[in-house]
Length: 386
Ligand SMILES: *Cc1c(COP(=O)(O)O)cnc(C)c1O
Image 1 (cartoon, protein in one colour):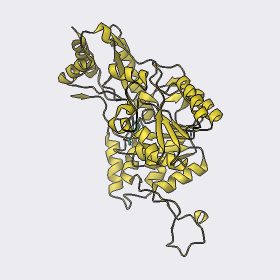
Image 2 (tube, rainbow, N blue to C red):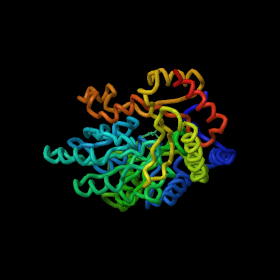
Image 3 (cartoon, rainbow, N blue to C red):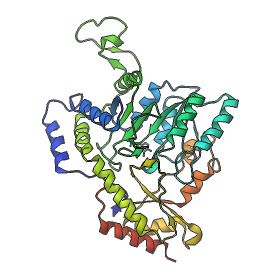
Image 4 (cartoon, helix red, strand yellow):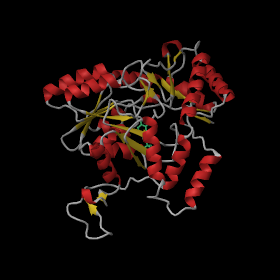
């Protein structure tokens, strides 16, 4: 089976992890701060806070922004459930904004309409989470302008987009947001097995995220309510969690970061070749907005079902049967039973639902060979043939 995504682990990665295994620190040692500094410098942010997953990064981002009961978090329906669940973890309510039919990202015009209505109802969101789907940056200038006008905070879910650029600057410099989060799950662009990071330019938000990542406990006398009792002393000043990244993960991440730009360039070569090879087929290949350079985590095609004598399901099943590990990203979150039980229903976000009926993610990872890619295309031709 050719998977839709997979990690690339080199001997240098293995050596870096083994070195940590033989060292004094498996956790809370020197590697995590080095990894954080590597990320922050690369993307152009002041601070990076590494954690054990992007889901944890979203959670501490929302906690740092003081999202809580009575507040609203808005995101896109076409994302992994974690982009929405972080609001529920904080006791807030969640709502969605429909997608742009060309980029599949949160549509700023739909966001503006919804904000106008929400203002009248006194239900404006506290946090909005745009997701850079497939690695393509959202229209951040428009979303940022709306955040200024309506007073909400912006957390970019850039789980798909590390190494991507928006208006010639790396995603993560937070020019248009308060916090940006990245994921290092093995299917993503670089990996730490499990892992994530939150980056920000705001000193206070960074400090709060550091607290929430590790029990709400501090050893910094400046954060304590009275002078330390002694050198052993620490204080719990917030209710935090244990979301720490290990030294093993950080060492792997530091090593992987050396190849980030090469990885994204390889993904672009693969995408360009797919674009050519699929040009005569009844499918829509990914459209790229000129403001962005995608991280290209995913390569999603949409089937022109009116020109194909097969259903979406039949094409998908045929690809899987032919050994192509295709997937669908994503099931609209509002149609998940957990969200339906909160009152959402099919019909709420028509562009997202239409996209879901046609989308298939083809294999896309840095080590995909041209012969594997030819096999994917051959299988797709076969799958959609009458
Ligand atoms: C993968 C992913 C997450 C969650 O990442 P983890 O590191 O697995 O917790 C969140 N949002 C999006 C859009 C993702 O693709």
